[in-house]
Length: 404
Ligand code: SF4
Image: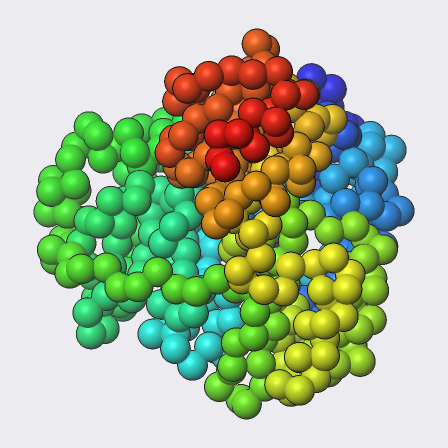
């Protein structure tokens, strides 16, 4: 594995996450990921598009967790990227990064504002960062339109009963805690995790200790039933100030810098005040009046972006694939695009290899790249044993018969 100047060995350990100062090598160059602390202004988003074009291969991604990625950077262009992003006025977490649900403060259906709790956890857990697994994660879901419960997280917080916060560990409901003690409980849980070593994840702790033991140890009350699933961010969403948020989906989570530039220009004309990347590979354009948002939606559709939550491409998950990932045995995006017309409401996961980066859950149909060909898995994940393996060139024909 090659490293860029300034990259240390710790960042190269297996499972380390790419960041602005420490991008990750992929098949199409270095990849840098950022999680802005605040929604972006249009100028900041336009600036990111320029950085993606000037320093990378012009592809910007919004991940399933709502993080931004710039692809195709090089050893010459990656150094200084963090400073260039900072020069745009974009702040990224300096302590422990905590993910929050989108539209905090504007979503009238949100049960609580997740940002103060996320800040308290991020600051309190900052000294633990060197002792935690690089992918250790905490999400705080305010219980509004867009939910984070579906994300894999070591610790997940959602609105509980009354003033309580519901705590899930590695996706398993553990208990409830009064909101004013929630940050302290999360930090104590992270300390417990760090004490097990810098690769420990919550799923292992839960497997060893058991949920009931951890609930008692951290003084949690038994959890009540979980609340709803939330809605797809794609589409129009009324906000508490009378304006709307227009959610735009990105096919395969990607947008080209030039298209993003056009979207930003149209958003400016429509009165968009800010843009939030959202979990579910989407951008939320916040602040236009409803009529202007409807027009902007047409413009976005004309740019090839996904503006209807029923668009079948919303149900297609594809990882970077060939040529972007060295592990890939399939050109996942090209393959997925040819299969969309066959789906008829089914969800599809096309994975370049069994790792399954794009979609950790089951899908109605999964196609996984293997050395022997394309594996077909029904109602499973790329790690499951395929029902059969076919040459990639025969896949469309095979599925046309199978799905008819
Ligand atoms: S699933 Fe495999 S091929 Fe796809 S991006 Fe992840 S490691 Fe690469």
